[in-house]
Image (cartoon, rainbow, N blue to C red; front, side, top):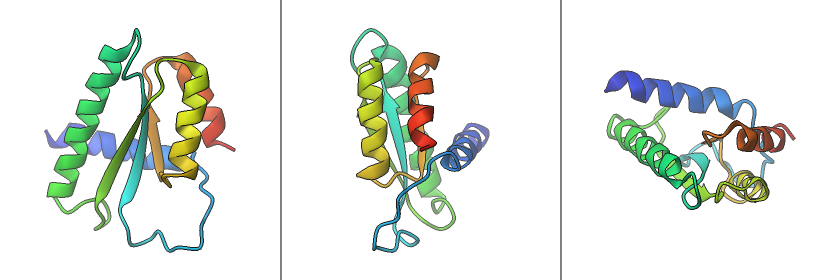
Length: 122
């Protein structure tokens, strides 16, 4: 079970380098590390999104049970993109700008992932 956890956390950390967050006036170095997930939780691909969400929740629970990541709690925030490109844009922007996600994960559909990638690189 440790290998999948390490893989998920390593991917989240690597993906965080693609997300350029705007710094607010508050210090985000001591609070939880927020991982944002945009997933198809409704619509035709909901089965994939639900499975991905449950796996991510298990990984976060395991990480936090072992002391978190870099000594900080890991928090997962998941938003439903409904399997639609226009919703992916809204969800990813919200995860970065509103929720302060340090890393973004999501979507099994490559067309939706391409939309998210462009937003994360802005």
